[in-house]
Length: 192
Image 1 (cartoon, helix red, strand yellow):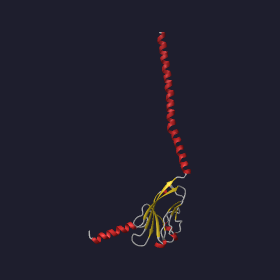
Image 2 (image 1 turned 180 degrees about the horizontal axis):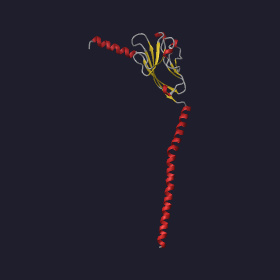
Image 3 (image 1 turned 90 degrees about the vertical axis):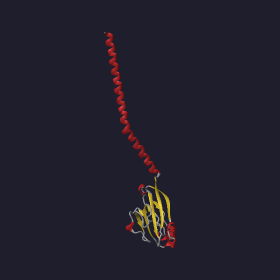
């Protein structure tokens, strides 16, 4: 490999590692609003185009885009649902994503890309959202589990218990008939 090519590859590798990327774990509660942070220094970078998407941030744009800005406001055609909002102060560089009335389906990885002019300058932030049930939801799930368990017990075990009881009654009647028939046979033999 030539020295010029080698130093070009080394420079490219350095540029790729300089582009900012971070990951944050966020715990959300189903039924509540959840905010995934994303901010940039607007004085340094100026007003920037920003997009939010689901999953990893690709080399350009956002995967499975859910909302974006044109640098000063949310572009309505980019918004997937009114549940996704940028409620921070865009003019101050706060482009944090708020998910209204979060559901367990909202769990997963999200990516925020702040497009900074120049090669490999984009800022990239990842947030991993996990679902945390509220105490009321945990109680509801527990009650549901207990109720389903009781129904299963009645559906599966009660017929089995009924069969066992019927078998025991039939078996005891059969033993009684057999015993009575043996007693009658003994009596007939002794009378002869």
